[in-house]
Length: 246
Image 1 (tube, rainbow, N blue to C red):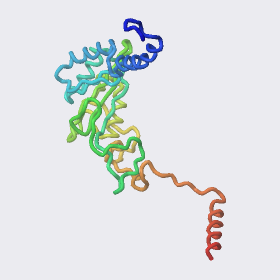
Image 2: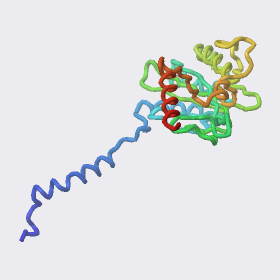
Image 3: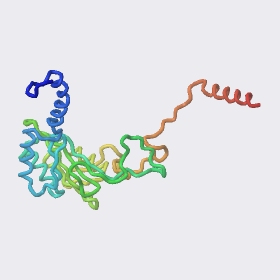
């Protein structure tokens, strides 16, 4: 018999180790959305400066995301650049949260995985409507950045221009206006970048009709011509089958 006060054997200790290691791994797994010290600092700065104009706060893989009131969209840019020292504008873009319409009774032939949603869903930070503008800014002197979002009124489709704050927003807002129809108040010259001046519609809206999806199921089947000799082989097989049944 083994004495109760006798220490565990090496075999018993080794058998218990895998479970202990597994538990330690689960308990110490880092949160991928947790702020590091730098992003905690810039998040606190932005929060304190914009205050009640912030509608939602979140983190996207450690980067602070703020959804702000549409009337504070330009103010958000000013705070980001001056208070938070985010002097580099990566982009300004639009979002259409409307589900892509079905192009036929049996669906659109969507082969994406996962399949495109058929009900309206919103990303991190939420939304109060179909359209949003969002931007990514970064500091060139500090290891931090911000993601900013604002809802766009579906009736007027108006958003405040960031050009007076970030000159580089000029090109991005022109593209967003062209592709989504969002008008940026205060932009010096909204004009087409890619499309003819008389082009009708906004191609990145989910309800923009795409002829290719109507003619062929999305993402479009490619017509492949038969290889040389395929027709002759098919005819020979058909003749052989006819002779066998006669």
